[in-house]
Length: 196
Image (cartoon, rainbow, N blue to C red; front, side, top):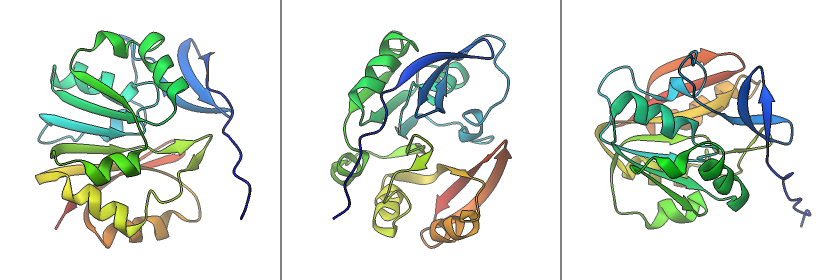
């Protein structure tokens, strides 16, 4: 059995004048300011039918939760983050402690999703550690569990990197979901999908 190495500790850095949560040299989240320019995290938010209830798997510093709150008002947001150090920074450094509509839960997303009985209009899947997608994120059983949590007409938004595996990853998603949109921004592609 291969040895599992712990991810490097998260830290807060200044990146181009913006507070950023960095893990292993990769920016996991940024602080949202008044002059915020469209970025990968904005691509998670559907252009049509804004959500009333949202689930974020891989909360990071809370960029998506903050953007959703700014755009949609105090909608119910459940944000799952498995790393307690990242969750602490999200609360203390990135302001999630001040968003009363956001419930930040320290838990493993796979375990939490398997036991959840609530449904959501938007599910954002941004499960990376130090630039690597968490193993099992695109596995069919997990995708089916995510589909089970979507309301009719709801959107599941997946953050993927532009790599040679992108087409295969999108194919995996298409086995469970209808691909509705592909938003390319920088080195990322955010896929908006809906269940059959």
